[in-house]
Structure formats: structure tokens, C-alpha cells
Length: 625
Image: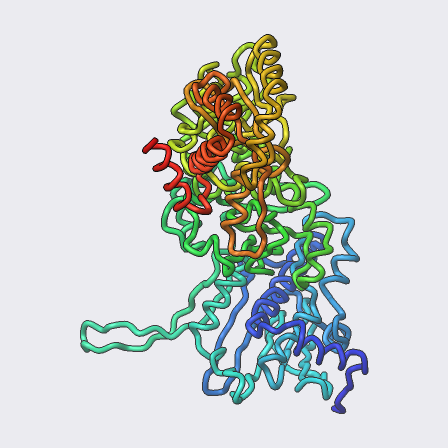
């Protein structure tokens, strides 16, 4: 029979697809098994709608065999089969999808579960095969046909013999070359592994003839035997009724799938139907993997279409702040052959991603309310992600994430949320107070903390370098402003006290300006009555705080910033009287004392002293007077 030619555009598409679209050669097996599953689906559906079609669903199966000597892989099914005309239409025109046509013709009917797009996926086999032979007998027909092609050159179709309905595809594997080891696909364990990786949840048994070595007790020798093994699980855990799944089954699945031998801290098992249907099984790990905070870590969920793996890690399903989540998503509304570029534009995927995000937030909120110890453990590992999500993109996601934050505080032994802080606020308290530092102990040493504690107001301890950025992004919670107590103008005095300190600063303006002019790097100097026992403190004014200065300047970049610093002097401390006396009688001495006070306040704040030798000399001079 004369060889038929592919159309010119089909030749170009085949070449483009083999060399560009399917860069991962192992995909071919997934595609052919999916097509076999589609063929069985079609026959099963026909049996439900046509009383003349007599088949038993229990008999449906897909068979795979490898002949290393002949260099062939054979995939066969007992599905609906194809006539000569269907072979011509489905395989003679690249990207002509028999499954797509079938689904379009029956889209008004329910329960049609067609995975693949017969055509494009089929031709992926030419990545590994020099020739493909397809023998098919359509159900109810008497004549079988064989389609053969060696690639772009064309194909032939002719009559042949076949005893049973269905389709048998034989791939003649290419010889190895310098760049490709095609022989790896002729190893039984390789094919078995690929089936389990990509097609483990095909709903029909995938059987394969395997050669196994068994020890014979009588001969005392190992003997090779042929056995037929069913390689796939068929019903994935995420499609089972969750009320019938034990915790051990969930944990085993998680361990096997994601190579983590510590049980997850929470799971989210979802079955959604509607405009977009999907099943998902997500896990929140109990600890961060070793590479989580490295550039090599890849976020993403395993993405399936009707039990067939599309993508190992689909990043589009998770926002960065939930990159720690592991799991699988399976949707019949996604095309098996969807590309990365198409995924980024796919509305179905966007809808699923938004739904999953809502469910993750709910699960974390429930964990926080019902199992606080577990939640605190989670937050220790992944709290940085939540914080990043709040201040990233100019705080776009702050409202949906802020309730996931927890902080240590000055009044409680346990970590609390912002809501719990507000619920426990003292009568008359108007703001949420926080303070930043390297540790709780160092925060407690800060002079500005003393007056807040004296009022018995709770202080949020911010010991993570991101905390201040996060709280500034949130701004306020439940109409209560978030106030950094280490900033200027945080004064809890009553109106009379405020009036008195305002008058003192006004009366001492010349002296305070003189002190400020004698100290490099200071914005201003003022008296305060918020310090009880401490003589001075250093606070900031403006958007950049002292803690931000330390954080940003410690980063390995060329960017350096400086907070606008205000030196506050305790108006009720003996030092205030000392300074006033020096201003009147010895301004040079005032400069030296002011320098000591300023550098001391820098040390209290954890800032470096530019000239420690000068400071030491000044202190020694004062001590020897």
C-alpha cells in the first residue's frame, strides 16, 4: 500500500513538538497509557448507553510488555478500538484529538472521564521510537487495521488480523547515540517506575509481564520466572472517602510521596464540585526541610488530570507565603497536555489556587484555635513565610494573613495573636504596643519599656528582624494603632504631666539645641518624663526606626540607611540638673558629658560606637575629676 503523507503543517508541528514541547522523553509512556485508558472509557460509556454492547467492566485492563532483544515496548488495551477511518483521522493528522471530539460530542452528558487528547500525546512516542505500529480492531467490527509510521516521512494503513477488539501499540526503540541512552526504556524496572510515577491512579489495572528471580529450595539455585504484576493503585487516596481513611494511611501516603518521615502537623482533604471540580490532599509539614530557605527549594503541588500526573511541582497553585505546603491536586477540568505557559493563563487553575488558599488559611486558623502548641511549632518553622506574605507586594495580603501572627509578650507565658492582645487590653489603653530587639532580655533592658510596664500594658516582643516591617505594614488592628514604644512622642503621661514637660522643653530650648549641635548624627535632644530610673534613651522619629537601621545595614548589600535619632533625657533624673548647670558654667564640659550620654544610649540600643577609644577616654576623664 502506498505511503500517505502528513500535511505540511502537521510535519512542522511534529518536529516542533518532539524537539520543544516534550523535552522530557519519559512522558511518552504516560501519554500512551492515558490514551489506552480513554479507549476503555469510551467502550464503557457505550456499554451504558447501548444495550447491544455487552462488556464487563471487571475485564478492562491495559497491558505493557518490554522485549529488550527486539527493542520494543508494547502497550495494549481492550477498549473501543479504531476503524481504518478513525486511524486516518486520529493518527493521520497531528493534533487531531479523538478524545476531544468524543468529549465535545457528548459534553451534555455526565460521567464522561476522558484524560488525554489523542493525537499530540501519541506522537510524543517518536521521541524514543524510530517506528510505531498500531494494530486496532473497533468494537463490533470484523476487520482490523494496522497503522505504521517511521515519523515525518508519512504512514501506511492496511487490513490485518486481530482476534480481540482494542488497540495494540508497538514502539520500536531507537538505537543509542552520543546524547541519548534510549536503551534505558527497555528495562522492565524503568518502565515499571514510570508507570507508578505518572499513571499510578489510572482507574483500570495496568498489568506488566515481569521477570523475577526466585530461590528454589530443591535445586538451591535462583530461577527466573515470568509473573504478571498489576503496577498501579487505581484509586488514589485523595479520591477516597476521607471518613474511611485512617491517620496512619494519611501519614504513610505523606511519607512515601514527599520523603518526610515525621508526620505532618495538619492535612486538608478536599473534594470540590461546581464550575471547577477538583480533589486535593494537602499537608502542612511539622518542620522545614533542610533546603527550605535556600535558592534550590522549589515550591508547588503535584498536579494531576484524572489521576495522571501533569506536573511534579506546579508553583502556580501556591502563593509564596504558603510555599511550605505539600500535596496533590487532581482536576478533570485541566488538559493533560497543558504547558507551563498555558498554566499561567489558565482560569481553572487560578480558581483552584484561590480555593486552596482559603482552605489553607482556615486550616491554620483552626490549628491555632484548637491546638496552640502544634500551631506554635508550625509558626517557629514557617512564621517567616507568613510575615513575608504580609509585607510583600505593599501589604496586599495583610488582611487575610495578619490573624496568623503570634507573638511573645510581657504579660503572658504563651504566644498570643493580635486579636487576643486586643481582647485583653486594659481599660483606657488606646494602642497596641510593641518593641523590637535581638532578644526578650535585651528588649526588657531598654529604658522605654519601663513606663509601659508600670502602666501594666502588654508589650509585643518583636525579636525577628521582619517583625517591625510586618507591624508597620499592618498599621492598625481592630481600629487600634500598632505603636512602637521606641519612637518619639510615645507618652503615657496625663495631660498635666504632658503640659509640664512641654514647658520644660520650651524653657530649655537653647541648651537642648546646643547639645544637639555638639553631637554628630543626632536629630534633636529633648526632655521626657516617660523614663523612670534611666537617665537617657535613644528613640527615632520618622518612618525608619533604629531597629530597621540595624537590620538593613547588616544585610550583605550596598544599601545603608540611618534612622533620625532623638536623644531623650529624663527630666526627673539628677542628670537633668547637671546638664543645666554645665550649660550655664562650662559648655565644653557639657559637650563631653553629652557625648558620653549619647554614646551610652547607642550601646543600650545595640548600636555600635564609632570611636570607642574616645568614649573610654571621656569616661576616664570624668571619673578622675
